[in-house]
Amino acid sequence: MGVPTLVIYDISDNSLRFRISEICEDFGLVRIQKSAFLGELTSFRRKELIAKLERVLKRDGGPRDNVQIFVFSKQCLLMRHVIGAVKPYEVQESQLLFI
Image 1: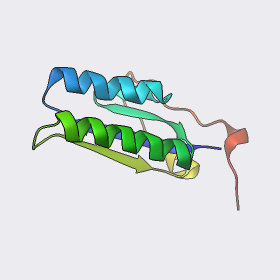
Image 2: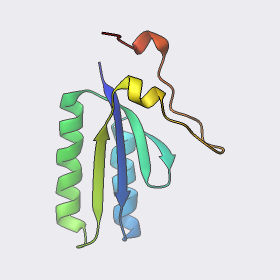
Image 3: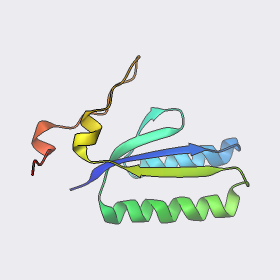
Image 4: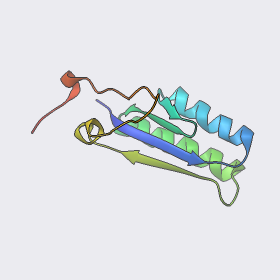
C-alpha cells in the first residue's frame, strides 16, 4: 500500500515545468496547487518517480530549478488544514492503520 507523497517544484522554464507536471500525473499524483502534487505511492513507485525526475532535471534544468519530495504518514496528512477553494486530499478511514 502506498503512503502520502507530496511533490513540489520551482522550475523557471515553462516546457520543463510542464514535463515535470506530466510526470507527476503519470504516477497518479493529483495537482493540489500550481507546482504541487499529492498522492499515494509505494516505496518502489516513489523511487521510480525520483529517478525519472532526476534524469529530466539534470538534463534540462537550470541552476536554480528544484524538485522536493516529501513523504507523510496518513495520520500526519489527516492533520492538514486546507483554507480556500482547494479540494482536500482525502484519506479513507479504512486506509488508516493504528498501532
